[in-house]
Amino acid sequence: MITDKNLKKIKLIVFDLDGTLLNDEGEIGSDSKKLIAELKKHNVTFTFASGRLHSAFVNYAEELELQTPLISLDGTLIKNHPDGKVLYQSFIDKKYMQKILAYADKYLLKIALCHADAIYYDDHNSIIPSILNKFGAKFEEVPYYGPYINSTLEVVLVSDYKDNIVEVNNRLSFPYTWGLSTSYYRSQSHASMYFLEIRKKGTTKGTGLQKLLKHLKLSWKETAVLGDWHNDKSLFETKALKIAVANAVAEIKFKSDHITSRTNNEDGVGEFLEMVLKAKTS
Image (cartoon, rainbow, N blue to C red; front, top):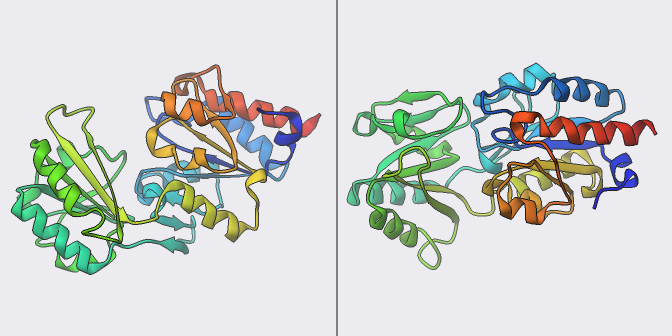
């Protein structure tokens, strides 16, 4: 439950981007932009926690003139903008990368390596840019993966055979593998495609935010998070003030402290920011 007392304590507001701060056209609402500028005068800072690559949302950080480190690729990287200083990064271990590449070859899976600034694929995986929906990401074809396996934040495997994806997911899970976190799902835009995302174990938006708060010397009670989708779950399991926009999935709404009456297309974030500003100025 939200009270003016809770809102007065807020010093950091963390936005998910797609489906939350951004409308379906990829734009920030005009009310949100005005209110962010106004709340900065009251010593409130802002950042993003997104599944996007870092390079795929720095334009929004520039638009809002944010100075706080940004959480990208679901917590695998925390990087400052504009100076580029890395606060935290979570690379997949080389031995696991070699195992993943071997499984991709054995089970005829398409594979992409996600780094901070680009998604890499080779000529055997040329379909990747057309099927992998990573908003705003730069895709780059490379001759081979060798030089890139030491600094991969996330691997995405793709197949139109669910059984193959499930088999590899099982082979990369406990007890066969200790150091990885996996998640597989069916594509929303390509109904016949199945995806498996692989990251270093223990990296989520929530753990990324925990590291950021320690860096900023802030507490959970001074933090608000806003989200809409399943990958925001770890944020909504923290002790931060949790705000779901009206279009959020049921799981996120259930875990929230407040649900806006407006969707992302109606600038639901602006609705919450107005509440914070009123509390700060009352």
